[in-house]
Amino acid sequence: MVAANGLRTWRRRADEDRRRLRDLERDQEDALHRAVEHERARIARELHDVVTHNVSVMVIQAGAARTVMTGAPEQAREALLAVEAGGRAALAELRRVMGLLAVDTDAPEPAGTADLTPQPGLDRLAALIGRVRETGLPVELTVTGERRAVPSGVELAAYRVVQEALTNTVKHATGATATVLVEYGAEQLRVEAPTPAANPVPAPMRATGAA
Image (cartoon, rainbow, N blue to C red; front, side, top):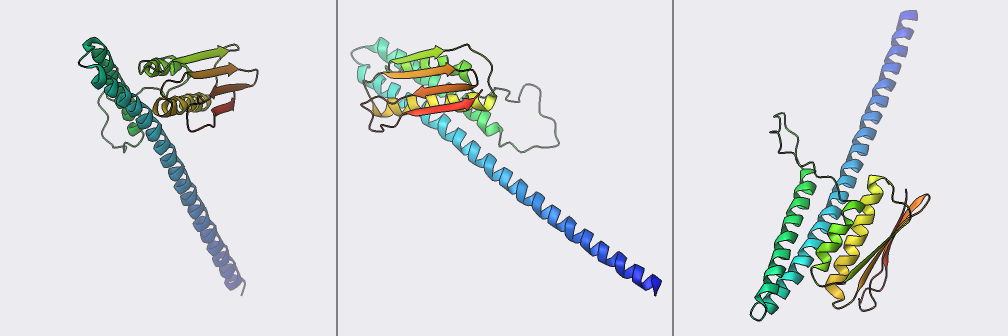
């Protein structure tokens, strides 16, 4: 009787352990699925930002080149060079984003083939604004406060806010002047890129993140 009772107790505990293990495995699978979906959404946003901005700038420059090609070939040449630069920038960012989707393999990757380009941050705002200015859109950049390091996620979000705002301005507010404000606070970073009055999308784009 003692042996039978001990066997029943052991079986009951074994069944409970198996149930807990199945529940743990199911929770891990759910967490992995949520992580994959979150990463897919993030990469989709990255692709949208990269393609929309660079292609919009290229379209504006190509249209300008076509307009002045006969009467001002030198200006047309400069516009086409800007199109080429925009295309190269788009390809570089697309390679970086698509690299996140690469499937790992057992074979080692040849040296020098990995894309180690960092995600864009505030240090690349000047280059971004320079490309936009080449389209003929005046952009005023104001930076206040003491420059300091901020989390990479905050920097990326700030860069994307400015990029999206300038893209909308290029597309919808021809002849307007864009302004970008970057303010370093004691405990936060404030970024504003208000859309010009001529833009049919009146809401300004801004971001505030903990520094």
